[in-house]
Amino acid sequence: MPPPGAQAGADSKDTENAASAAGSIDQEKYDQYLKVMADGRALVNAFRTRMMALHVFLKEDLMPSREISLAITDCQRTIHHTGLTLKNMESKNPYPESTNPDSPKIEPIYEDADMDQFKKDLYEFKALETQTARVKALRGYIDEVMQSSFPDNFMGILPYEAAFHLSRSLQWLTEVKMWLGWELGRIRDLNDLKEFKNPLNIPLQ
Image (cartoon, rainbow, N blue to C red; front, side, top):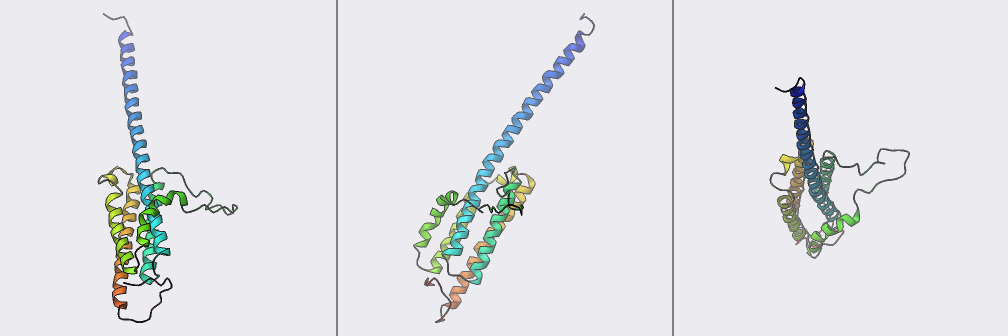
């Protein structure tokens, strides 16, 4: 028969071991969560950078029109919601001075160096000589970006708010493609007109 208190001591030791094991499991799960968030942020950052490159192309390399202006606005909305996605994935605030009226500093929306690799995706479109060809190429590019940027189960591993904003971002990107479709319709309607505003002198077709 064990001496008095021995069983209580054994039970206490077992409790400590169980607590230690549970703590180890919790830490392991937390470490896994941190890795998932880090990998997820990398994917969202890459997507955001591609949207920045698309935004630059829409502004600088297409003949302006109402439809292109709306595509630019919706591309900006796409970028806005990727920022909110990252905010809800425990990212650091990239614009700490943006609400400080005492600071003259204005942080850049994006770093040019980070965008170089993705601008290369669009360089080949500049060789296309007509507005029609460039718009069609961009519509195909958007399809490719939406299909390849995230794995099928990606939304399911994100915190709710992050998943919500990423979903909104993809919806706005769909709107960009739709406005480019409207631009093709505008070009079709202009085919029979002799004069129209074309400051970049890009042939329509």
